[in-house]
Image 1 (cartoon, rainbow, N blue to C red):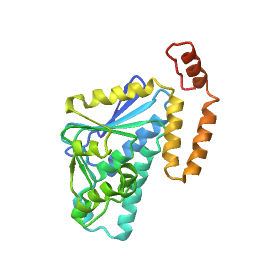
Image 2: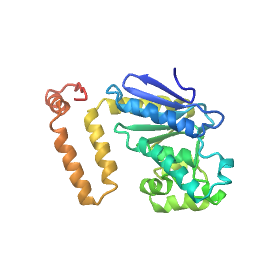
Image 3: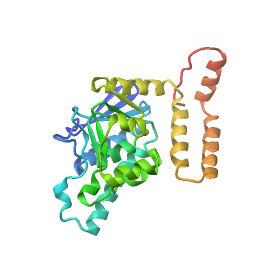
Image 4: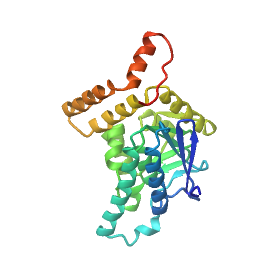
Length: 259
């Protein structure tokens, strides 16, 4: 029976995950557990080439912590809490297939940490994004302070961290936090169009490019180049590479199989 908090819909080779945890799509432990279970199953499904993550409704993409639960939090409890959240976000970041985040509503704190763990972010025009943790005397603790500067650079990242200010989707687009901004009623259509474009390419090549890019960012340039070289070499052994090159030479559309 489908979870009430995590809904999965298959559209050809695209898996759409919708978080449905009213009223604010809070990233509760229960939701994260269900989400992780679904991710594990999808990662093992060869018919899934791209994943889209979104939230239900138009008001909230995903809310972070229950503020009331923070009152009695001490060092030990705080560390345990963020390590569990970090493990959840890492599961999304290291998902071997491309992950598109379709931000349908307010995206703050833990919700933005989730979005940053995705590969591509698009947002509805009315969306606001930010890290308000300093307003509570806290900091983002499950990846935000590390992934945001790597995404938009330290200047804008520090501005958002230090001020706690929420920015518009338009501003997020201009600083590279999101890749596209669209009217709300076009959000999922646009996400699916991007997924379809990705799926028209060699899936193993796309996965190798994701692996090389994400792993390379954690290494020196020379180490990253080694990772890229190895990825290229491995792809040369695939049937998809042979098909892609032959199709180009024969001036036809390639028929990739993910093999």
